Image (cartoon, rainbow, N blue to C red):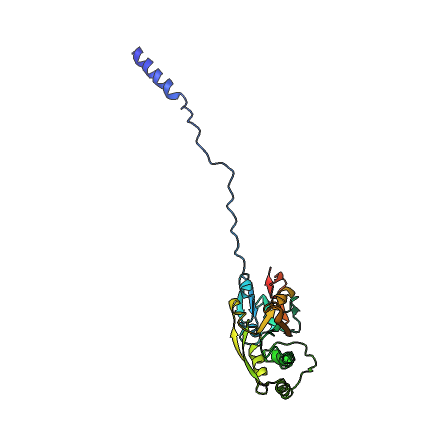
Length: 263
């Protein structure tokens, strides 16, 4: 009997001992790693080119790298600024617009080592036959009109005949696609000079004795003035001012050709 009580006592003592403390559990650190903030995609700059620039923007690829371009086919309004477009650019001196600090120029490059340009009297006839004001008006490029001192087509035809070309002459006209090529060809036709315009590549410059080009810096003009060596003659015909409008939030820089682009 005594042995039974001792067994019960031992059991009760063992049952009342505290349970052993378990090993500590790995708890997550209270420091929470911040997830990187979602980067907002930059909003594309909406860029409009006026109809009078179509096919005549030399730096189009530079603009396209920084903006979404819309080539307008008809008239535009400065009221579109901030609603449809962030930047609007056009050829011409437009009221209320900002003028680009770079003004391209269209020039005639002549090889005076070949007839009929070996005759110095032909050069002034070519120049006088181009009426810049009417060329730019036909292209819808507004500029300040200057007093015209040019000769009439009839007078120029007489001068051409006196220089030994009563029936005029024909020439291929290499060009870099400046605004006004077709208009100049028409004006020459009025004095019996037939020009066949051909869009040239850099490799095809030299075969042409008559070039119509556009340049935007003195260095660029100097390159054209040496294309035929010592026989090169460059005649500047007209300037092409570039106007633009931009919303205040867009910072503007300029391409080598004078076109505004977001910086």
